[in-house]
Length: 65
Image (cartoon, rainbow, N blue to C red; front, top):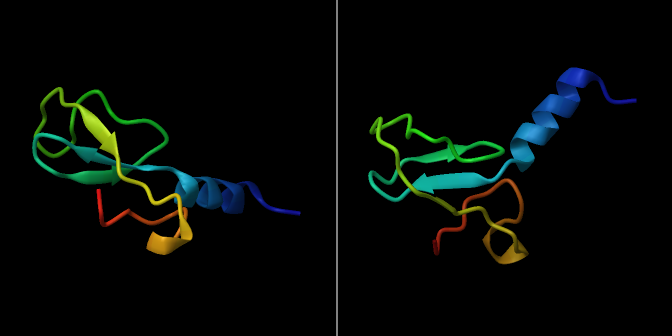
């Protein structure tokens, strides 16, 4: 049986990575923020998560993106 803390940690590691298209900051979150925490602007974000074994699979950033 998995505890709530372990479930939350596991969910966090499976959250996608988002890259700010203005400043390049990468964050891991379930959804991209409205305001970039780094440049404090309303920016577009790109999902740069790895979804294939070639780049490490889930929980990693795809270096090609």
